[in-house]
Amino acid sequence: MKKIIIILSIFLILMSCKKQDNNSNNSAESKKVEQANENIPTLDYNGLKPWLNRKDDKTYVVNFWATWCKPCVKELPYFESIQKDYQDENVEVILVSLDFPQKKESALIPYVQKENIKSRVLHLDDTNEQFWINDIAENWSGAIPATLIYNKGKRQFYEQSFSLEELENEIQTFLN
View 1: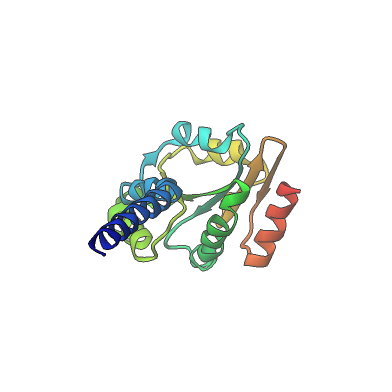
View 2: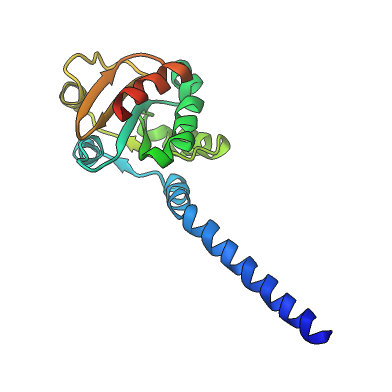
């Protein structure tokens, strides 16, 4: 009887360890992003540009926003929903904050932590707006929110707010 209890105990311990390994593998990427969001990198446009031009098998949804922009903040949960619901379809959301540099510590980082943002967050600090706005999209006035959706076969820029349904519909055009 003692042998059976010992064997069952060992079996349960091994199964528990196996389950933890699987869970940690599945969430390894999201943990990397969470850690990165605690130390949100500030990039100039040259540092941001590679994030806007990847040539792999993913579809990227790059949202330009700021904590002081009410329409931006209103639609952020939709982007978070996309990040969660479409990750198995190889979609990655990147949130590019245009918050003022002096507000990164007092506004951006606390907001990302408070709202438990899971998408990758990058902070853009480049004073040559006319160059990078034009380079991202020739028709962009610079107003936010604005979103770039692209993959290796298609690229589209949107100077607008999205509802979740509108955002999902646009992403579907990239996945089909």
